[in-house]
Structures are given as structure tokens and as C-alpha cells.
Image 1 (cartoon, helix red, strand yellow):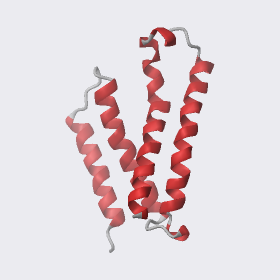
Image 2 (cartoon, one colour; image 1 turned 180 degrees about the horizontal axis):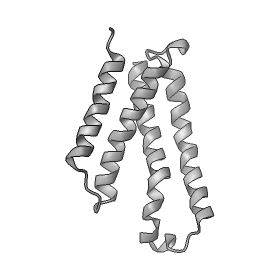
Image 3 (cartoon, helix red, strand yellow; image 1 turned 30 degrees about the vertical axis):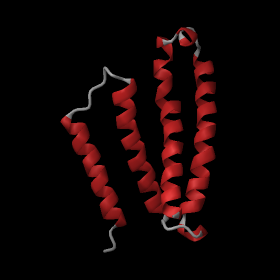
Length: 123
């Protein structure tokens, strides 16, 4: 159960971080965001990143093997990266409709999934 909670918390965390890192690129399309300066955008992104940390820190504490969780540090980072790229693909398709994911992107993401397998495999 700790593993599932960890993954869910990391997913929510990554949703906030994806919006913090890339969501501001769409601000200019909205009336309220057309005249925002860089400092304003940075503060908005920091505000979103605060919520990212509200989920990310508990996820890592809950999931880390030394704190009673099921995952090693390397496994936690691998899970986080796989979630990040998965959410990024969805985010790109939903919010940046002009961006196209090509076969090379999908192959690259598949290789990352393969990396997850390799890292979690008991050799």
C-alpha cells in the first residue's frame, strides 16, 4: 500500500511541476497573462512548485526503504522520471496541440520504460 501511495503522491507532485515548468508558456494566450513580466511568471511558477513539494517530499519519505517504504533511492528517482515523462506526453498533447509527438519520441519514452524494468529487475 505504501508503494501505491508513493506513486499517487509522485503523480500529483509531477502534475504541479509540469504546470510550473511549462504551463507559463500558455499564459500569453489568456487576457490576464498577456502583459505578465518574467518576474511575475517566475513567482507564479514558484507558487505551483510549492504544491509540488507538498506532495513530492511526503511521497519520497513514504516510499523510501530506509523509512519503511518499498523503494530504494534509485527506484524512487526512476519512478519519478517515468511519471514525469508520461505526464509530460499527456500535457503536451492536451495543452500544446501544435506540438506533435513523433515516432522517435515514443521510442525514446519506451526506452525509458525499459530502463525502469532494468532498474527494478533483481539480477
